[in-house]
Picture 1: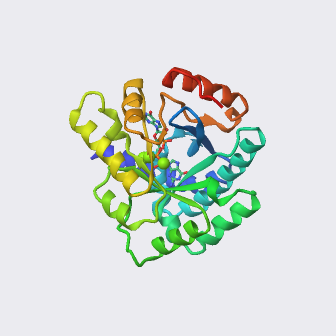
Picture 2: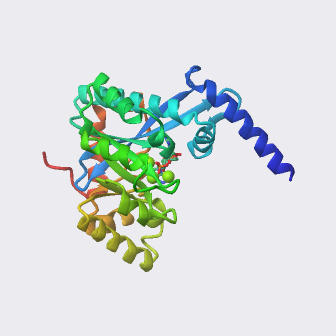
Length: 278
Ligand code: C2E
Ligand code: MG
Ligand code: MG
Ligand code: MG
């Protein structure tokens, strides 16, 4: 009982503070690299970080749901897309080549009025080709096939923006999302990857899912790869892209520079046994 009251107090405090977090410049993005099958850098996933004045770092797993409840996720999410596109432009200027920036968006943002126009305006003002932005959607609310979310996603897809389904397999309605959304990419949830080496059931499921996803014409990213045994299996099954602490931790923006091509090389040597031939 007491624990619940304390938790609610913290939640209330965090919700209040979130309203000012943007103005106070307490929010920043980290960027986790995503690699192609031969160790080539595909791009990054932008991950939101909040340093609260009193509480210190607060996890997005805790504050994103609060930002959704207070609708603060709409302005915060817009800032995230803008900041991530700016970083992508900077990365391209630093000689990292044409990369894809993956940005998490809440279904609340997708339903908010003017969302499509906002994204297109950001792409324009940051000189970002639409094909270089991927929006990651996580299962949240029930999606109506004739509702604004599908309409907005189709408009964005038609403009060239990539759409990914995040955390596939974590929730109860993943297959409904897979049927409804205009997707390019599917991200297999970490819970599938975690026990690959010791669960034959998980191995059968992941191998079959990769085949299914490919047959649907989509690309697959495996999330949460932490050891080389998992990577080896995913490689054998032709998983297209790989993400996880084994290959790269989320980096500060200042960590994105030409030396990443070196880490790319190191990652490919360590994980794939040989550097990618270019
Ligand atoms: P996500 O989109 O599924 O992001 C992947 C999460 O897994 C990140 O946690 C990342 O740091 C973590 N991760 C990556 N590789 C590994 C690994 O090998 N092992 C383990 N154990 N974890 C790994 P993070 O940054 O704490 O973010 C948590 C969630 O918060 C995200 O899950 C996403 O749903 C949400 N989130 C983060 N940034 C944003 C944002 O800008 N907007 C919205 N709407 N949600 C966000
Ligand atoms: Mg994500
Ligand atoms: Mg995910
Ligand atoms: Mg997640």
